[in-house]
Image (cartoon, rainbow, N blue to C red; front, side, top):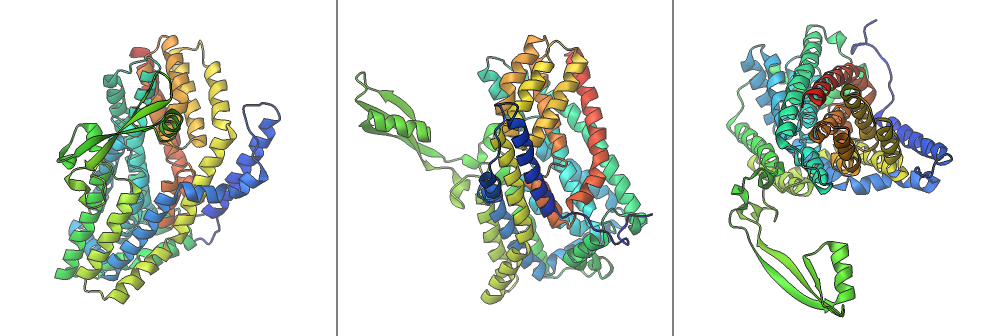
Length: 522
């Protein structure tokens, strides 16, 4: 029987899955804490507070999503996006499939260079509407974003939040990682995993376009997507050239996302200083009691600490930035150092600019913006809950428990077994520790020296870590970008798992083969 959109079926909502995960983690921690002191049992109060703590931790992303909703609502009110998508699909003349590998490649490059993952949230709605207008379903658009960026993170080359931090941690352990190996092997993993991902997305897209009944989306999901993005799909058959005002809105819309991407790329770490030109700073010196300066130094990690011989007084030298560069005029932070706070400010500004350019009155602009923010509350809730899962997993000590025991079991194994075992270890740990920065900091001081002591190239372990955590990012509900993005595409988490399981398995097999060969040869 077909599982397409004509079949009425019910799946667990993402909210229910999040709460089940929270309860499962608490239960596992309670059981294990009775056998080992490495795992801390979660108290009832901590479990109850975990969703709220998740919101506190994910406030930046949640606020960004809300403002993005208001921004998109204003753009949609002008009908510019619907007209633009309709024009694009019409002009492509049935060649919309070409969009899939091209856009996935762009997302992959961004992911490989600077970890483009949570920042993709804004693209789910856009590509869901685009692919629906082209005759696919909204999940096809979600696949392009999620797997495209995921492939990039998996094949990280100069990603400062993955391979960069991992290399730095190894350096602090006295191990210098060969960056030629890290980048070269990262490229191989990137290309091979990209081919796998594109194959699965293209196969699904062709199947759905030929027969809409073969979509994995349920009738409820399809109806929700149609309600959200149906105007764009209708624009395909009711194509009319965008008006002059709509063209201006489309240019401003494109500029909004372009600036966001430029703002997120860490240009300084890539050796590009164009956006910080004109930067200036000065050093300030203050004399305070040694006890106070030590406490301030330890709490805030400020400047250079110099204490007098008698430890009675001290000198605190701090660097104060007078001008962060010409591109900091908008948010106080130069392009390249942006994160969600700056991007939220930018989209708020552009929402107003686009509303004024479209001729909206003050009341209409505010009403439309607030309605758009309200439409995103479901996504915001998912982001907060997913962060709560991640925090609870870290608080229990489950991650360190798994790391210590599995790394001990890998001692004395062959290169192939070591590559496979390390990959499985990082795969499991990445479910417990979603953040690559945290993962690298916790695991590399153990796995790096272990790799070197067995006579293998420690640089390869960086790629093992990046690739395994990248595959987990295809499906882990602890990743707010996944849950938020799927919610924007109106795809339930259970539906996504039905598709992505085969992709994860195929990608993992390819990764292990590549890494095993590297472990033997390099």
